[in-house]
Amino acid sequence: QVQLVESGGGLVQAGDRLRLSCTASTRTFGSYSMGWFRQAPGKERTFVAGISWTGGSTYYADAVKGRFTISKDNAKNTVYLQMNSLKPEDTAVYYCAADSHLRTVVRVTTGEYDFWGQGTQVTVSS
Image (cartoon, rainbow, N blue to C red; front, side, top):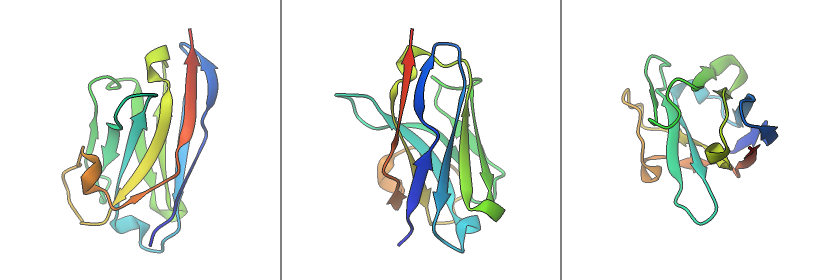
């Protein structure tokens, strides 16, 4: 069992930036592909960004492409989501997730991830 703990959420204004972190409780973090998802009130959880276990492949939802950057630090067992130029529509609970299947192609559906964090709230005011 892998535990994931997100941090870094908060209340910001439109145009601001935030960096989310997700730290994993595993010695084999380097073998996990990681993803960030978000869920707004009354809506489904949707894919935001992902990075392959090698770090060589990243993928972004169209809504965040060019504004968000995902990165992975295996030495710190941590995946980051740098969010720039935030918009009110980015308001959601953000979850990180781990995929243990050594896939080089980033997955975008929730069912393909094995472990989930508890989420961190991001609120962007206009």
